[in-house]
Image 1 (cartoon, helix red, strand yellow):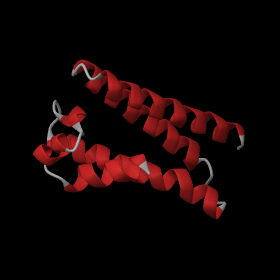
Image 2: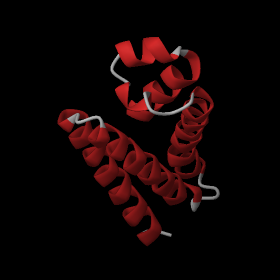
Image 3: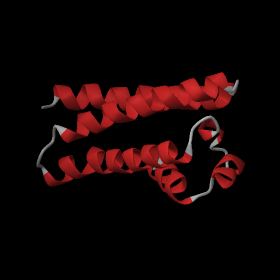
Length: 109
């Protein structure tokens, strides 16, 4: 849910509105990059669930989780550089969860 909400917000809201709603980590980045990350988040959400729900191409689930790990490393780095420990911690927790999904789904292939 977190990545769906974040992806939709980043793909539809203006820079100012994103920052006002708490997406402060986007501040150092140009909006085309923010929009690209939004698309990647939304594709990753689909990649996390669709293969396991349909029983086809299950390798995409752990690959999507790895992609979210990369996004969370970037997000944690951005929030850390902005001196936002709460957001950095939240990103680190999401990184750990995505890494767990990646490891467990790779093991189940």
